[in-house]
Length: 399
Image (cartoon, rainbow, N blue to C red; front, top):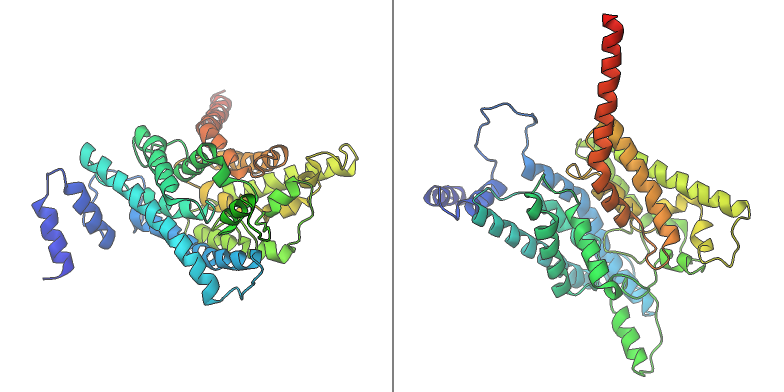
């Protein structure tokens, strides 16, 4: 008997029981669902939500694989024994550090999803398929697994399930998890040692009196926030040969992933483009302030304010957040005009926070979460504006 037949028999056996959602989820994950919609539909496409989520995951897989190579490459470079980027030694370090993050993220998150589905008696929701991949890509490589498990549980329960599950949450779940980690365990989520595997342990050994050479895994943002010059070239920034969160370093692969999401009509190009425009505008304003001499070189804000405005697109998590999280269809604006406003403000506020918050020189996470809250308000006023325009046209016609 085939696997499909066995799953179908189990599905029929547990039909109407508490365990039905669990077997239905497994069955529809492996095979296309055979349900036919009889009522009015608002989305007419050939795929279903699981396949849509899998398409987003496909766009992130290159970032994941690159992150594995880069994690090992940065580890050996920081410890003074550089290796070839595309080597087994580099990949092995990334594999043993990043794969457990993926397993814990999916294991804890999907377990909670299944638990809520069984308790509440509804179908297992597919929203966490993407969140489960996003989370390992936006955290430092050495994030403790227990810490990640706690954050995932918080993000799924508080960030999504309390609002009613997939499609009802007002905050991006992956960024909710990232924000929880940052505010609950700040020493593990920021600083100049957390971005390179082994750097934290080495710094502790040095602090305890060990005769070891100090190493630094500081990101470009960290260096600029402290008024230091960065040793990385524009090519390094663009291709991703720099320290940072697992999947956020390669602007090239993120750009290709964004184009893939636009081509498949899953990601909103309006949000992506407007976010970039907003960031460039804010960067130009800061460059103008520096050029006008309104800020001295001794200011703690000078380093990031004097950074070339377009460099902001290549460093930190801006590109990744813009492509994969700002475009979340649940928490983003829904109207076309609203998407332009929503995206522009994300880019604008991201660079604003990045410059004026030297303790946390990265603003895209907070900017997206802030605009998640205001997205319904933006759409409300866009709709009301459209209603008023139509009423004016109606009055003109009837006059």
